[in-house]
Length: 182
Image (cartoon, rainbow, N blue to C red; front, side, top):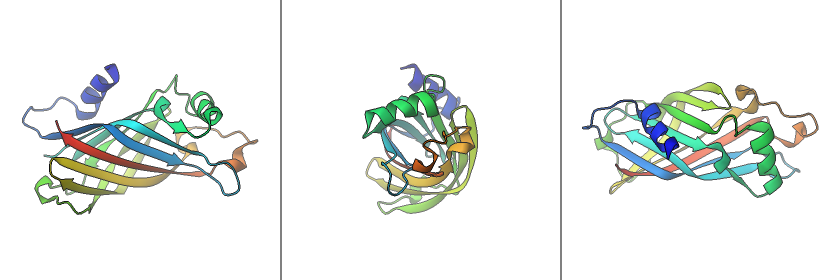
């Protein structure tokens, strides 16, 4: 519960009650760092909280790191203990603003928008510039999806030499959110 309160206060700031916001607590974030010929390094988190302010295009998401699920339980344990250090860094945040966002222009067909913001993970923050987002509106739902590439080294995560060749240097992050009016 305190994470959702923190999300509300940190990511949206103190805001006027007249602002229109759409929210989800069941968004999906995936990452993949697989290398051909080795075991798949892929995880999914299906309980990501995200919010968009439809008046100004501010968008934010909160990911609880321990929510990532792998096919292999041992890989999940290693991810949480050795790489993400999820007890020390329990959450990741994604916050910023969608450029030229006009809510009234959304349709049920995906439109591409640019996003500028920051990704914070493992105690480090990385700037995201001109990230493509696909956004559509269908009834009372707003759908936002996209993907981008990053590196473990961007967040001071060291990959041991023994497994270095089994994990891709570039990690693909993809996300999908179906938000409802708050």
